[in-house]
Length: 403
Image 1: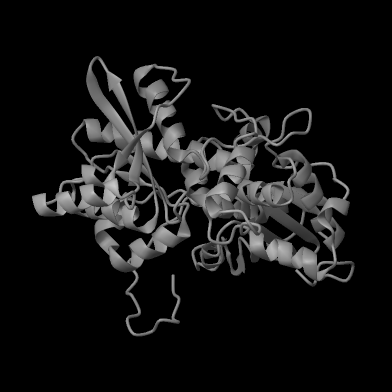
Image 2 (image 1 turned 180 degrees about the horizontal axis):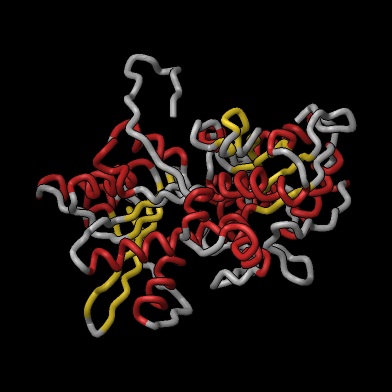
């Protein structure tokens, strides 16, 4: 980021800001979501950024693609072609683990839709470059994320501009922690920053300038999939998706292990393994979606998928306990505050944003109309989907990080 300024070599500098980062910074500085977005926009533009975007927009694109992908496989499963469950691919931590440890058994179940970070990277480098008549290599794209593993994701060899193997979709990833450190290193007082107008280019912003959010602290994948299946497959409009907490003891284990698990639960050592929502039509269960966070819970789902005995049709998986709002690179609690208290404030701020139950952003509609074509179509798949790989684990090389 130090090169951002009047002498920069790039013709266009774009910053993409994740809503989880915005909530974390707002909680730390006791600000509102809208005010925080304006202040951070001002900060990055003072550094030399031309445009500050909100990845709530790219997540909306991801949700559309993910729903089309799932419903296609869901309908096929009704005819006996079982490609379920589908597991989200937005969390690079768990995807990296799956590629290294579970390989061919689990990879067919991972959603091929790129993460919001990488979809925004594609839009910036492939579409915005056309709109601005700037070569992809002349755009410098910075992504601000709640997770250190997003740096690894951006470095994947898959995530480069088509026809330009040396041009990544995302050039630089900084985290919530690094963002505040950058402000401190430059002597910037957060509260002294004057709010800049929100950029409406690829924006998920209301007419009165307030950013819209996505349901769910990690993007609302499971909730959106549930609604879309209900609507498209069963002509049902669901206003409120009811999730129930399922605990680890729900998994089938040998009796003596179950006793230990029950004891641990009573000692409050064991937390829930998944939040589950079930869709029932005419008394018959037709769909089960789940949200599971944390490494241990993630392992349980992967073992089930690997054995072909997963009880869920769609699973929103995040490696961090509590999901993206509790990402490993989010800001730390202040003195005298617990992590749980801080997460509660971050969650409250994040969900204070108005959410659209259905993607209805005219900017998103225009993106498909002008460039991508149909949701799930050939062009959308070429730009917004990817593949994952069976990667041998570098046993004995703890510092070797390879995607």
